[in-house]
Every structure is written in C-alpha cells, then in structure tokens.
Image (cartoon, rainbow, N blue to C red):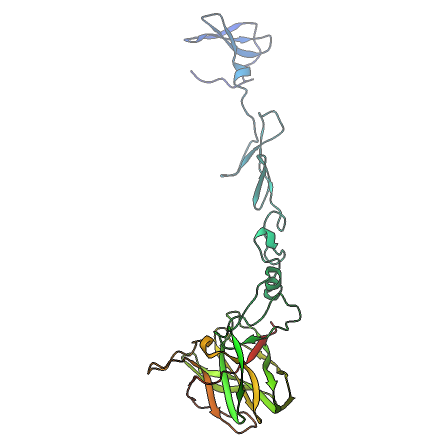
Length: 314
C-alpha cells in the first residue's frame, strides 16, 4: 500500500473509510483531519501522531553533520561551525586556538600541560630547569648570569692540583653540545705561581680526524700572581657535535687545578700498545707567545691533565 504523508489528504466527512487493511480499517477522521486505523481489537491508532517523526532543513551537503535544534528532539539543523570540533556534554562547538589546543606560533604550552613554557630554547631550558655538564651542553640553564664553567675533560669527575712547566702547550678536547651554542669563556684555575698565561681555542682537523687543527681564538698574555681564575672572553659559534680543543701555555711554573688521571675521560681512546692510561689530550713544547699552527700532533697519555674550563652563553 502506498504511504500517505501527514496532512496530504484533504478534509473529508467524519470517519471516511480509505481502505481495509490487515491491521484494521483505515479511515480519515474529519474532526482532526488525521489518518487513523481501527484495529480488530477496537484500538484506535492515530497515524498522524505516530509518524510525525523528526523534521529538518530542505537540503544538506553530503557528509554534513546534523544537530538537534531546540529541546523537543523533533527538529534537526545543519552544523555551521568551521575548524576543530569540541564537545561539551554532547553539545558541539568550535574549539578555540590557544585555549582548547596549541596554536602554533602564538601560544607557549605550559610545563604543567606537557610543554616547555616558552617558544625559545634558552627560556625553555630555564623553565624546565635543565642542567648541562662536562663535555655536554656546557651551560647551566637555570643560572641567569651564566657564570657556571665546565671542564673540558668528559670524565673529569674528580680534580686535584699539580705543577706545570713553562713553555709547554697543553690542549684538552671537548664535544660541542647537540644544540650548538656560543662559547663565551675559556678559563683555568691557578693555585699558585707568578707569571703570564695564554689561552686559546682550536678546531678539530675534521669530522673523522679529531686532532687539533685551525686556531680559532687566542688571548693575549694574561698576568696572574697567586691563586685565581684566569679567563678569556670570546664569542665563538659551535658546530653541534664537533670536537674543539682548549689550549693553555705559561711563561712560568704554576700549580694549577688538574683532572685526576684515574678519572680521565676516554674521548680519544687508548694507546694501541695497551697502555695503562687513556689519551687525555695533547702536550707539545712551545715557547711562550702567540699560539702556534699545529699539524697532526700526537695524543698524550699519562702525566698532568690541566682542568681547562669553558662556558656557553646560549
């Protein structure tokens, strides 16, 4: 039987019989113009009321979301929001950038929310309280004044003191941090002695040759009498992961802070002949003055290891 939509039939006299069906007698009640069925058991069913259903707009876009309009549960409307969807107790709205989700380029995700609290690396390290140590990041991020110096020897967890002779150039390596950064200080701690000190920075020969190569920076002669920290200020951009060498030479015998041999790092490996001490750096004879050009100097094992210090400003 063909379905008759609600309100389609014209008004007729009361109880006009439309059809006899297996469910009962179908008729149009002129009192309310509703199509009804009188079942065989006498039950009267108003088909207009039972099939009123849900109404909505006349058209839609394929795949479009439908929403309830109002509170009757019988009217639908088209969803009109654009962007990321947000549900609150089942009610749809558009999520707000920077409030409901991270907005690239404009919002810094708080540490408590799993972010860094900053859009810059320097401020992020401070917010996270990161601390970088020997041979690694070379900067204490939580220190605003950046006054923390770090030893070049990656295994230098224990220091001592020892004497060094004048006119010897000592070089100790360190690995630039993965973030790169800018080296702004070279230093050595003098325990006793009177004279002058020169500090310098060498690049490594290349990615596969760790020996000291090009001289990048050197200080003038720095007079030092008695205990104190001898420093040289510089601004040297570091290549991430590259090996650099800090150098020192004096014109007088000094007692200096040293790295305990038993705690020396093994960045340069061990002698092939099975020596008992690892290579810690380079020691070559050099008359006090401008730092020399080096050509594949041999690594040194054993002896005195200067505790040379570096610092990154960023």
